[in-house]
Length: 74
Image 1 (tube, rainbow, N blue to C red):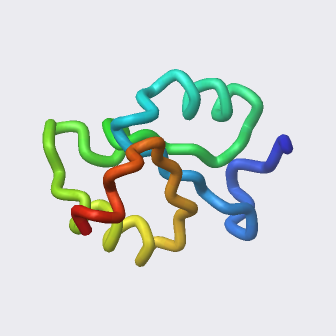
Image 2 (cartoon, helix red, strand yellow):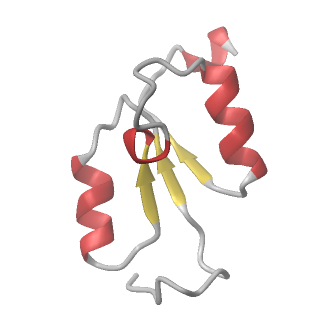
């Protein structure tokens, strides 16, 4: 799925801290819209789940996590 980075019709995938930076970087290398937690919140080590989920959902991003306990904390 290679996309035009200027094409707003393609989804942006937001990867939380549990995924790290390698997956979003690999996707960016093939021109998929992907952003890591650290890309979006570079100065903040810990952003509450409720905060980043609400903000990224509002932006229309597809959220990706491997944190199985997230549903119990939000």
